[in-house]
Every structure is written in C-alpha cells, then in structure tokens.
Image 1 (tube, helix red, strand yellow):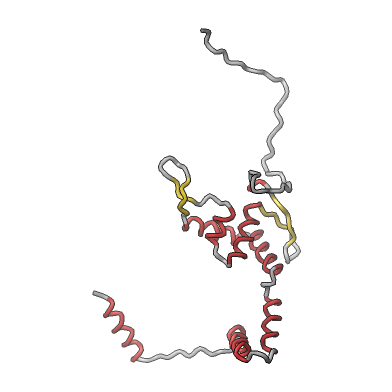
Image 2: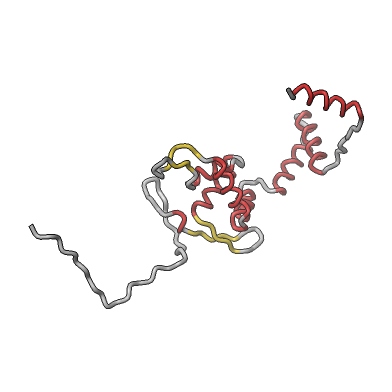
Length: 186
C-alpha cells in the first residue's frame, strides 16, 4: 500500500479579497432557511430624519421588545442572541444566562440606531406621546363610563405633575421605622 500523497495546487492569480464590512442585502428568511443574520443589514430613516442601519438580530430584538411588553431578556433570547450557559465541553445548554441577556439588552438599547428604531416602531404601533394624549383626551370627554373618566382625570394630573406629594416628617414615623427594623434583626 502506497502512502497518500498530498496534492497542492499553485495558482498565479491572486485570490479575491474578502470584504471587511458585511454586504447589505435583503434575504428572505424562512423557517427552514439558515442565514447568517448578523451580516444582513437594513437601512431605515428615523423620526429625526437620519439614516440608520440595523442587523437582522437587532431588528428582531426591537420587534420582540415592543410586542412582549418591554421584557428585554426574553426579547434577546427570541432574537437569537447566544445567551445560554455552556457545559464543560463548551456546548450551549438550555438554561438562559439572564444576567448576560440583560447586559446585552441594555447595551443594545443604548445604541443610537437601536433606540431610533424603538422610537419609530412605537410610533408605528401607536404608542407615542401624541397617540396616547389623543386616547387620553377621548377618555376625558366621554360620558358613558364615569369610573373610566375619573381614572383618566387622575392619570392626567399624575402625568402633568399636578398632584402634590405629602411628605410627613415626625419623630413618631422614625420611631415606628426603627422598631420594625429591630424586630426583623436577630
């Protein structure tokens, strides 16, 4: 039996350089299609008129963040970020590292492009200040349900800061606080 020979191919042409920045393309992503989401960018115009760029995962994070109701850890997991604990072999487990997910979400939300997309999506969903003020005004002007009207008036005063907060100072309150703390301590 002869030993295997290594084949080498020499080429005099230079290889095509790999671009350092990801190429912006729109690729339809289906359930059975595996796409490197982090390399797919999409541009959008923010409400401030500036042009921003987001990756697929960043867009999915924002969509999940808004539809779930602000649960940033679940939004990170649903967007496909790698936030799972690893086993001894380095393989991901099914347990989510919630601290890592929370930190990643905070960092994402601080980015200008992500925060601009959150603001734009909230406006698209009708969750901006103008829409809420219009809905609030409707509740104030309706006469069918007076309980709803009373709550709307209460919310209006709270939102505008027209309620004065009573602050009680006194020795009795301090004594009560110290007594309750001493009961808790051994």
